[in-house]
Amino acid sequence: MEKYKVGVIGATGMVGQRFVSLLEHHPWFTLTAVAASSRSAGKTYAEAIGNRWALETPMPECAKNLVVLNATDDIEAITAQVDFVFSAVDMKKEEIKALEEAYAKHECPVVSNNSAHRWTSDVPMVVPEINPEHIKVIEAQRKRLGVERGFVAVKSNCSLQSYVPALHPLRGFGLEQVLVCTYQAISGAGKTFETWPEIVDNVVPYIGGEEEKSEQEPMKLWGKVENGVIVNAESPAITAQCLRVPVSNGHMAAVFVRFQNKPSMDEIKELWANFSGRPQELALPSAPKQFLHYFEEPDRPQTRLDRMCEGGMAVCIGRLRPDTQYDYKFVCLSHNTLRGAAGGAVLLAELLCAEGYITRR
Ligand code: NAP
Image 1: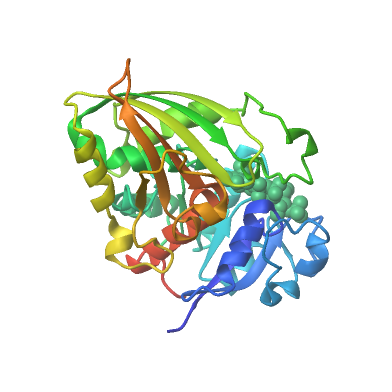
Image 2 (image 1 turned 120 degrees about the horizontal axis):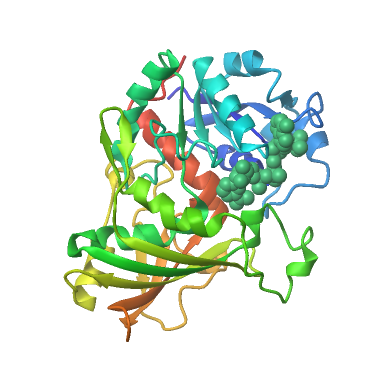
């Protein structure tokens, strides 16, 4: 099969590096363009990265000699070389919004990691197993932008990619109230232990804006497409407390939940074991075979990648038990840069290709 040509905007950053790495052996996608700020533009990818390579695997050979383009000045040159782009830039929100729309207006689909467009009502924010049907709002977005093939689609914040998937199959029992405490990895702040030594032996009880995102974004994920916009869900009531912990990549969440019609623990475990979504149905290349894995061992899930499931693309759940104030409590976990950031965006791009929203030029 002829591969889709892909560009990465913000390719030198933490998430951008993960995109470059995930694209190395991707069966559908091939990396043809990398772009970043004027600091990196004109250098080869290897020169621009210098000693910033942050992944456990080496820099892909295919990326090393690509010349980095300027993400804001070279839009025409970039969009001419690709079928779509991934976006993960560190700029002001309004600048990112304008930049991503500029790519879309150059008829280039943008699959974004950035939060800038998450609340734009005709931009789908998608966890592919949860709300794949939201991508149909792209038709209305294209009308607004006056384009035929360009659009912006985003993934949600990484913190909620553990507990929203775990709660999703239980919605039929009427989720009423959810209390969640997240224990978030340092890669979510774009950091490693080398670049953030103060985090060793430390917990930081503040991540700017994270509690609001963790409480509100699930409402868009569980919303409905109506008249060309996404109308948010009104329940459950979610309250969140988000902590940064000294862990590289595993985002854990401790969840307490109250239902309108309380299910049994066996019913919950059965729903988790049997849940599968559109990516599994379409057998997308990055889709885990089983999305939700429940552990009976009392000391699981754990945050090391070698203790996660399906290469970090599945959600791990454990310790389901009754609670004295809520109906139940449990713990869940997802990999920040794989499921949460770049990997989740790659899965979304696969969905958009399979459903015909991204096409070859
Ligand atoms: P990062 O490591 O700081 O990388 C930022 C990237 O943006 C670099 O490629 C940088 O290029 C580029 N950039 C900065 N200023 C620019 C400008 N004025 N014009 C064009 N490019 C510019 O950041 P990150 O951690 O990868 O995060 C990137 C985005 O993804 C952020 O919006 C973040 O909120 C979001 N995100 C991150 C995570 C995560 O796990 N880290 C998860 C979800 C979402 P240079 O190298 O040339 O400076």
